Image 1 (cartoon, rainbow, N blue to C red):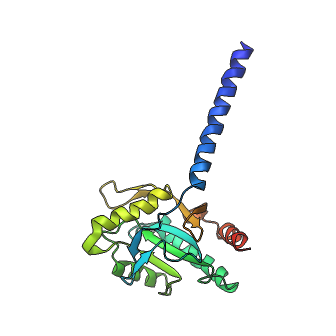
Image 2: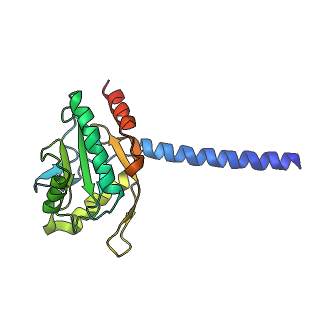
Image 3: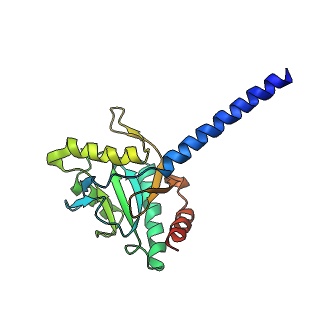
Length: 200
């Protein structure tokens, strides 16, 4: 009987280890396709394959979000100040905020969102959405990004999206480095340390 328990326990352990390994390998191989092109808060095109000089901290939001999205944005503002103090923001790392609700989050709405947080409108922190004239195509482009990062989201029909709660650090080739919790659990010191380690 003890042997049966031992075998069962070993099988469970192997199963758990295999599952953990699967997710670690999946994350390690995650990469945003270089051909993905969206538009920013100014209506200008942004192509993920164009800039291969900076790390990117990627945040997914929708502007109607009542809690976790704006909380994360505020914490990223504080993190941005830390990066500015050491001279790496805009030079070695940029922020990308991508809406998962491009139908409502037009460039104008994203620009208003930025202004509400007093975020300077420049190329160091871009807010990305889809082109209204090609919104179905660009929504598919956004999904390529979320799928690559394993970021899940769904609109249950009331306009309040259910979504994953991670931000992502990717390298200059858009490859996954690490992920961090959103909202109140976003630890800016942890993100800061990880970025500075990557830049050394």
